[in-house]
Image (cartoon, rainbow, N blue to C red; front, side, top):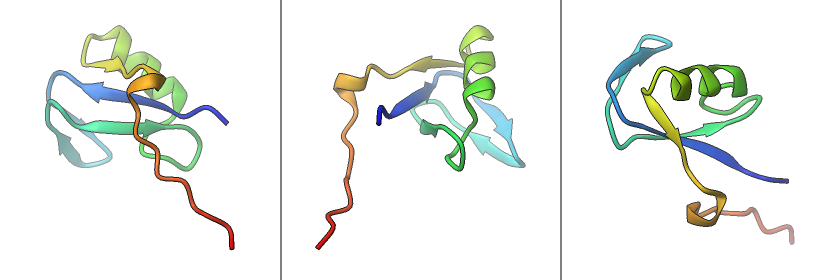
Length: 63
């Protein structure tokens, strides 16, 4: 499963919270922000996509 994330570049409000620049948001259903919201923010130049290679993912280990 690929993980997508965006990095906030301009402050904006999302669900009542003020998000500041340098805030990373996980994109997907049940995550910080939906894919359509993320595309909209990137289109408005309020955020940029984070390349998957730069993501540090903490995976749950099943025991």
